[in-house]
Image (cartoon, rainbow, N blue to C red):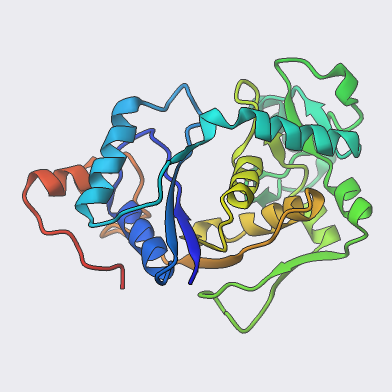
Length: 277
């Protein structure tokens, strides 16, 4: 038996890809517990109507979930506590760089090479790495100092096994490759107080999730989250990254693909799938 979760953001209608992800998570609970978590840290885009539609869509799919439902917007104190712990260890720093600043730094002639793209986009060049948390302001993001994090843990790599993608082979990323290929990831975005990586790690631990199921597009994010688990002394669950649902052109479905919204299938009287096999 597993404890799994489906964690959508109420920023648009759920589509067929979400249905597959939810059914996969529920099916792999294997007579255990299936949880629903609303990832609404982006309050500028989250809407109550989309959250209500999530409940309706999942119920139409025949799913039931443990109550009460966790909402990230109600857990800012937990995220701040995690940030404070990392700050106390000297592992985070404030960053005032905009995306344009980062692009300009990476495009500078003296760099002499193309930007490295990591799980969160271009790897941060470290412009603000010298700054102290004592000078952090409300307009700053908070970044993890990846090199210091590995040194603090005395780790030379992070690793995990995926139960679906090459399950017999560990996925390993060395410390040097993490620093150069992933970099100093954002743990708190300006105006939000947290980020996906920090929130998901703190919440999965708080809910006792034992098996993380999600699309394989998030496979490379797993190294970031396992590093955070080590730093915060949190358990590392098992992982199952499943295939993505794509359109006729092979493009991954997104929330803008309204033609494949679950609500439209409901309105048309379609019969929901029995499983995500």
